[in-house]
Length: 130
Length: 210
Image (cartoon, rainbow over all chains, first blue to last red; front, side, top):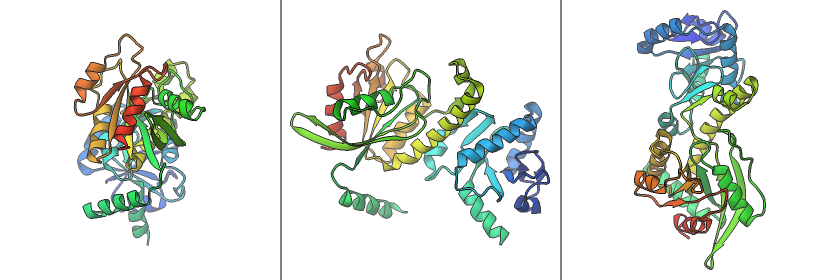
């Protein structure tokens, strides 16, 4: 189950229909979770629960960070890499990874430490959607 | 693009580069004095400022460019586009801005913009022909941010000049900065008061091979 809705936290199996169409809560942004990280994330979630409002704020922040070239109606997959949003307004940046990427593709969000690989994700999503 | 591709890109870039298209970037951690230095350079040679300076970190959150600055020293001339960048940090927390008296909503926006600023600054790095790293001379130079920036510039073979700023302050220690980065030229200046700025200009000719 490597995908998790950013808004409600629901987990989805890889290639679930919801990842393409959007979560049952209406959100269209997901974290991609590496299998080996899943347990760690679940434990973290238990420790520091974010409110729904905080989650929504984080979702908005990510859209703002990604920029204008994002279609709000298409699902976005977040990968765990270089920018972590711990809570709204609290960011942690992995400079080494940011410098490494030709284009910093990856932004990181709540529930511990997550990032977005937009371009690659969109390419993959586009292929899957067809 | 492979090694050859990169070489080709660089070669073509240098072939078609017109005079005055040298991009000189000011990089460094927040509150080192990048914008103060950018303002000093721009005021000295263009008579206008680049950006706003404040005591609160991450005041500059967008790339700012001043084009076609020509500096003169000892009969030589150097024209460049000056690129002032947002401070690079590993952690940006809106609560730090709250402590500086900024209201919560504005602090969160500032944190978001500062994060984007870091990404932009890093994105721009490949476009730079030479970089001045502006460090606060009163602070410990051995930080992850400084080492990461300098290491990446080295890997990209971009010429670097390190400036230990704020030497007007008693706590400033140029020797410590020099000891941290012995393979680079380190110049101690006070961008605010213009102290030692002539030496800085002279060093710019050196890193831009003019």
